[in-house]
Length: 252
Image 1 (tube, rainbow, N blue to C red):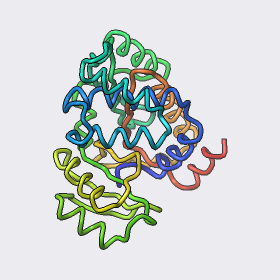
Image 2 (cartoon, rainbow, N blue to C red):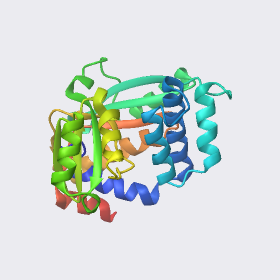
Image 3 (cartoon, helix red, strand yellow):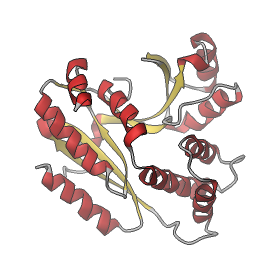
Image 4 (tube, one colour):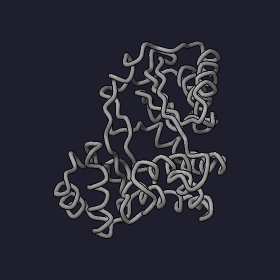
């Protein structure tokens, strides 16, 4: 597993075109608030914040929105008190699902996540029982037309990256979470632009291939319902599907 499935690639491409812009801005703003709160509001001194600002610019997030999020994180404006949370469950067919939230109201986010689970016919799993099937890693994507493999490998591995793989039209670099900022900075300093989806994420140890269209639809409907919630930042799963089923889903 390269950190995201073939279906995730399709979903990602569709998401860029279909996702509500306000929802995208809201999620990035929350990430910026947390980064500014943890490391300060100066992008020159805060690598994670700098990466998020670039991500925000990549989706045409207004400058005022970015600056407001930074000020909330540093305490210059109210509204920067966000709490991280995590929920775990199994979707149709025993597919592992880990849901990460950022919220200013834990009761609200818990209620909304449980409601989405109930509609999908599942319920909360014991904490740790699902997340132990994933590893927290830094994941950096580079379009192949932005760098040659030899140069990228030299820069990334010297900066502390664990691995470099080819993933479709991109190179994928895996890092320890603690080395993500260092590797990202080395790549940026080398003049190599990173894809806006580069981030610290959760990568499954093993992948379950879903071969039934109806089951795949059920899982994706559940994931879509979770991602539609304002407090949900990320949804991680361990499933993959064949190109044939992906094409059927993509056509619907």
